[in-house]
Image 1 (spheres, rainbow, N blue to C red):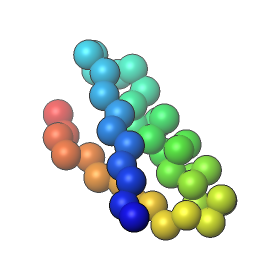
Image 2 (tube, one colour):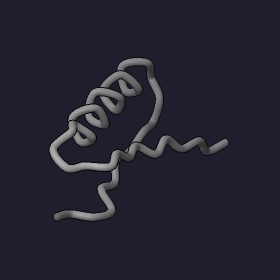
Image 3 (cartoon, rainbow, N blue to C red):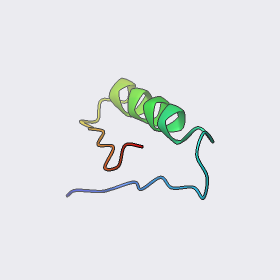
Image 4 (tube, rainbow, N blue to C red):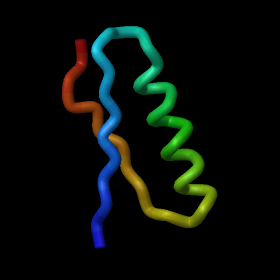
Length: 42
């Protein structure tokens, strides 16, 4: 089963990438396969 987490915010420089990295690291340490994709770069 594939599950997704979508992280969004209304502004820039609020820490979306930082939080995404922390979540990904935690998932890896728990033994889950996870990936990260940043759809829009500005």
